[in-house]
Length: 580
Image 1 (cartoon, one colour):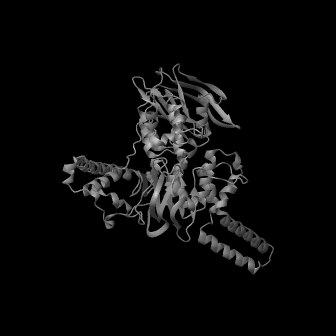
Image 2: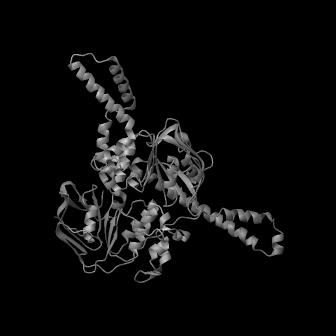
Image 3: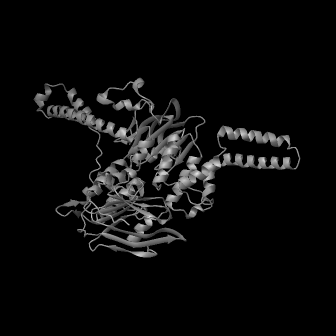
């Protein structure tokens, strides 16, 4: 076995906006692109055929924070739209409004789903019927279609039996079967049951007869995702669909959505997913909704150009402000000679001052004790559950400075290995040895340990005023701000936070304790792309070792020096390099 050696409130135009021409808003040098020169790309949808329309949506959040104001948006049928933005910017709320999960009295404006268009919605925390099995829950999305198939099978068997007995089947049976065949052809459901089985297998759903009240959060999400996809709606609303999926399941989902004929609107932090599926990016940024025609990589380039243009515009605006302010501060006699209307001009400029720029800061990890030559050693480890072997003969050493990504299908033992390393579980066989100076920092997939009655500041600070970084110290408020909790955001109650915000609180609490070996179990779940970049930078500069379980291929590619791949049947493969 190879031994690893490390190296070291949204505002969109108030008139209805179609996503086809929206990207012209931020063309180079402010000049609109001509539509006729734009080449049609996959995922853009069918021009002129709409599935959904939002008109002047205004929505306030807890604490009277304005999420949306006069948001108007139309979506083409067949468009694949990725929504990105910082946590708390209203991404999940937008999907809830479109799905009809928000009470109309909670927001102003109208949502129109076009005639004969069905909506499928996967929330972050899906609800399943606990009185039904896994398979029965999945069938709920296609109950009528399954009833037609079952009845057709019954008629086919009955007609065959009558013919074998030499009897002529009644005309009403033949007519009913013919009608059912017509319905099956039109709905394209002849192979529906086979598609359900394949989807369940691809998404690693639990056994069909499993009761859902015993499922983990990840298992429940996979069942809910399968149920939503199988229903074949015209508009798919997916809130973090890749959470709790392994790499193979994500690849299957990408292929499925790429070939899906309807409209997809997905909130996701998976940047490869956004690259491979999205034909549009809708960015929720600093009070605006900015649509862009293209995938994530193309959006990144456009974003950089737009920020540079905004910077130039901001410099010119600041120069005008200084000139106007100088006049406002003139002595009374000098001012009297000027046009007093210029005061109102200054007020207009000030009112239009640059939008508060979101800066995620740099996530800095306080240094822990200096690591020895080996910070973690696993020897001949074996673990099984219910007679099923997760892994056996697992041995490896982790040197200082290594960043190790752990990949594998769900249920192969990745999180179990973490629990064994941290002493939460005992293996069937083998040992785990920590270096003399090793100090573990562990973030689990669960976010349930936070105190909902505390503020963000109190939960993270835990009574501390400063954090020691060796040759300097940082006050706790500045440290928390690096996790995108700035100003009044630090006063938010934990109970009001989104999933991504809760994840940031967990990360901040763990990292401030100064570990030198990080164990991160799906750390990217529910994080926005901006915070992901900061986390990547923080881990890359971390003076220690990190072991990361993640399905985020972009994250693994940018960071990892080694990969541990958990394969079926208990095999484990070590690879020197990143995910790709």
